[in-house]
Length: 306
Image (cartoon, rainbow, N blue to C red):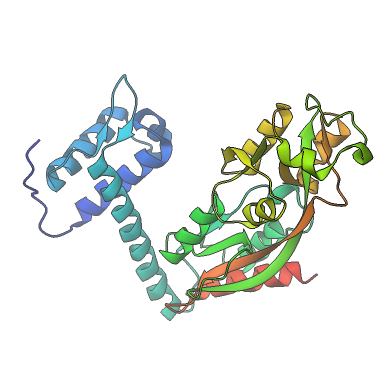
């Protein structure tokens, strides 16, 4: 494909093609995007080809071998997300001048909040729907670092993460907490041992699964000198490794209740290996929050104050 881009200024056609490209990437391929876009595969492929011609570069590999982005495609996709987000912001700003809450609200949070009775995100969404039914809500479950980066670059308007380090570019609003304990699976040597027969030095010798990014999990494992032998980026993956019987790992007690009741997982020395993880809502300090973001933050705080 020629490397000379034909694109000189963006038109409505270009915006439409970029939205098609975004949907294909989000769905993981042309076939999967058919239902999302409500158009046929041949039309989607033609749109992608048109966009590649307009931009002068190959965006993705697509065909029987599967779908994948090229290096250029990854860069264009990231830029397209920022552009589409900026358009949503502009549209919402125009609507807000007329006192109407519209636009997009992207919420990102870190794992397993739905099983925590202290996490009131569903109640906040319900309250927000009563006052802003025209706002389009997106909910993303992401690793902590991805949530924070997404809020900072504007891809997410609100994040909910365990508080672990303070960024001067973010505002923090405390919401709820989780109680974290160290668990093993039923095939682990510790499973049938009494806690009084397990020493801290023996715990330190075990294979441990932890998060690779900065988090309360990483801080706790450093404090207790636990050596990470496996890496995960979410608690579902952590549970899988623990259930294998090969690794120890920290999980919130509300998430493990099913496993402990079923007799396939247990906490190890819970009086020693536990910590409290405080979760906060995060938003950018600047620019000024749109009214829909401010109103949703109000709903979050009100729901968690009950």
